[in-house]
Image 1 (tube, helix red, strand yellow):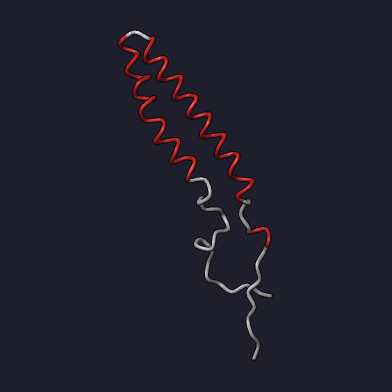
Image 2 (cartoon, rainbow, N blue to C red; image 1 turned 60 degrees about the horizontal axis):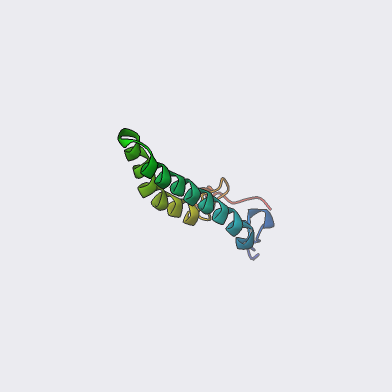
Length: 90
C-alpha cells in the first residue's frame, strides 16, 4: 500500500507581503492625490463642472480603499478552487 504525498510547488506561491505592500501604498497615494486635485478643482471651478469634481472627491476614498485592500485576494489561473479533481500522474 503506497501513501500519496502532497508536495508544495514554489511556483504556486503568491508574492511576498513585503513586495506587495509598497505597490498598494503607491496606488493608494496616487488615488488620494487625484482626490485632492478633485477637491481643489471643485472649489475653484464654476458651478456645472464643480459637481463632477465634488463627486470624484467624495467617491475616490471608498474606491481607493477597496482597491488597496483587495490586492492579495485575486484568483489566479492555477487556483485550487478552479483546478479539476482529477489525479495527476506521478
